[in-house]
Amino acid sequence: MRAHLGDQLVVGSPATGGTRRDGEIVGLHHEDGTPPYDVRWSDTLDVTLVFPGPDAHINHLGHGTDVGAPPPADRPDPGDIGRRVAAERERQGLTREETARRARMAPDYLAYLEERPGDPSLATLVRLAAALNTSVTALRGGGADLPPGRGMALLRPQLRDLGPEDCRSLLSTHGVGRIAVATPEGPAVVPVNYEVVDDAIAFRTAPGSVPAAAVGAEVAFEVDHLDEAMGQGWSVLAVGPAQAVTAPDDVRRLTEHAHTTPWAGGEREMWVSIRPARLTGRRITPAGE
Image (tube, rainbow, N blue to C red; front, side, top):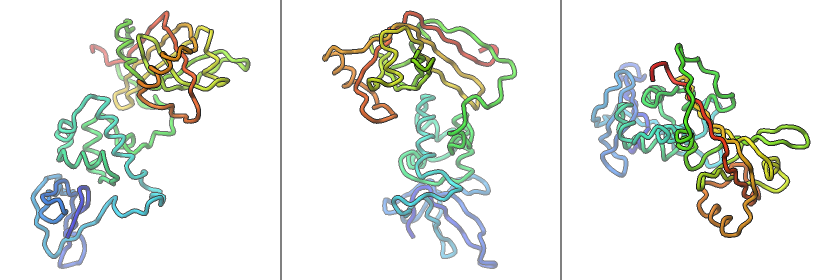
């Protein structure tokens, strides 16, 4: 008998041939996957050390799938849940150890979920969602094709203005924002990957594209974040002139220090820089915070 983290241990009933008990393997004691295992039982959520007997077998979940084969329609693509868990954990500044403690699971199992394809049980997703103050639907990517802000508003929300330093902190070093420009066809708002360098906002685009129309004009650039589970969020708006970055040394420095390539792909070697003349922001929180 060999198992991986995240596999299901099923203990059969000798009387009926059915399932007597099942649980998730959250800890291995041997590198080759042989017993014993740390098992979190689905009926009690307790973790115990188990030496499986002849009435037990392993269901290998998330392993042995043909490369390139489409996933079943009723579950997300392999690895998607782990990537969402890792992204939300890092966004909140939580370590794996703290997140695992909150979710009452082994840190090694959380590392497995974040790094390898797997299909965690509903009980595991419920605990992770609670630990990260989000929802099971969000971890499964159920809202990926829906506009943000469909959740319930706070009972007593507080809307407050943000100062320039708070706005700069929220802009951080990079991310995805939206630029508003005037085009011959009318106003347009498009998302771009951006970098913050020396208090200027810079992004890559292609000549002739909609974002390239920003060059030589005063534009608006907006970044925001919504916490659907908590019904709160923030937005930052930068307004200022946009210029093409043409000096070879400046272009090289931006390219070398870029945190990511443009998500849209393609040839986007034209850098545009926005020097904010006005930087404002707002945050929605529960009253009293």
